[in-house]
Length: 264
Length: 327
Ligand SMILES: Cc1cc2nc3c(=O)[nH]c(=O)nc-3n(C[C@H](O)[C@H](O)[C@H](O)COP(=O)(O)OP(=O)(O)OC[C@H]3O[C@@H](n4cnc5c(N)ncnc54)[C@H](O)[C@@H]3O)c2cc1C
Image (tube, rainbow over all chains, first blue to last red; front, side, top):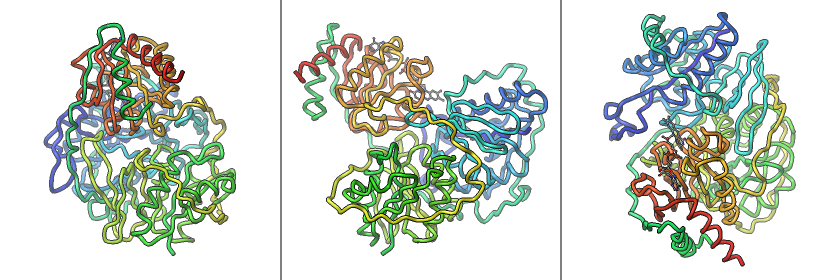
């Protein structure tokens, strides 16, 4: 069984970001980039499946991004995954979520897969469109928002989290899965894992090496959702602050404010 | 006349609140687009909802009553929409930008050559095309976007961005349609549906008021206090990651970068520091109230009203005062 874990290289949430006025997106040189933290849950789940099923499971981390994304793939390997594929090609720049999905789906097809394990959303764009779009392009079920995942006998069972609880579903493999952070507690990479990552197989591909990719569907010109303006949110005016005297009496001032705003 | 389709998100035979907001969003642009507003209902129950959908401005409701629509994961809904889009050639599709519906939108877009914008907080028409406003990077940046010419616009609307409004329309005309499902649509069955949420308390995405608790609650019992407050206000209850990680409250109520994004009219945080990852899920709330014993807590930077104090004193007093007001 082969599990492919697509990971994303995202700007650090805590970093100050500058908008690139020409490309209307974050200027990636203005902020440090990291492995998307949501991917750590997918990596952990892949490791647990591997540990439960033994050596016949191969785990492959997949990243689409520029050369600078290389260390992010290495970071993913340091958790114990077996090998990495990085797709780097200038033609990918400016892709929307569906264009990115085209590249990921073609790369997954080229690698060969039984399970694709995504995080349910990236911490930067947060559209959550990519896992389902990749599943559609691969022609397999999209078992997203999994808070529990079990794999046995060529099929999976998962609990898909939603607003009111969850749906338990079953699906044959191959399938695309995305996980929410409630699914597990990610381990930290060990020193041994970090050292071993350096010598694990890592391939770098360009788009011409991907099976069945229509490169006309990739990149800025193919994007079907186009950002036309971007501006920072105006700062918020300072509010009222009251300090309680230790008795809870400040609740009255809060209630007055709520009444004034017609919340009560 | 061409149509703007509104995919109705429904549960237990009732349209969710967001669906009525979607109809309001559709009405806001239908005139400029020169289209009718038509609802789409997948699964049983459309006939009972025709009245409310019409009252909120749907001229008709395209419906496919098959239980398979919800009996298998995502793909039956995608195939139904794909076939409907082919039949009626709509000007666009609006959907509730909630988790499972986004999957339907993504797969549909791949099939019909659509362009998807998620989490729109505003809609306009420019040169005959839909333009959506959305907040990105946790609400730090506001963008406008549009779908490329020739692609079907498939636009997800954020909760509470539009106000649902009855406009007094007649019941929506019921227009059934047939769907031919592929074998692939029936490969991933839903075997169990677990409903855990209280039926009496609104979900955090729908609620106009959300009371949210963090590590400062001290333990899980603190959430009973917040539930009491929320119920008095008719609000929902959310949590920080520190609280969900500790197992004090279920993960589906986590607000923030790796949880859910909410935009209630009032967000009231108790014992929450206001870390950037938390703010990413709530800073677009209209009003923010914070109760925190640390005057330096970052949540106060975005609070319209802040109380520096012990929540275990302030919140019970607030509950008592609200109860007294009720009489
Ligand atoms: C990748 C990543 C993703 C994350 N995603 C999320 C997310 O989606 N959502 C999220 O919330 N966090 C998220 N976090 C975690 C975030 O960084 C914070 O750690 C978390 O939000 C803190 O939760 P808290 O405010 O409840 O706890 P703390 O930061 O510990 O704050 C507790 C607050 O309670 C106050 N307090 C204590 N006792 C009392 C009392 N008796 N009365 C009044 N006030 C009191 C304290 O002064 C303090 O300000 C994420 C972190 C990472 C790294």
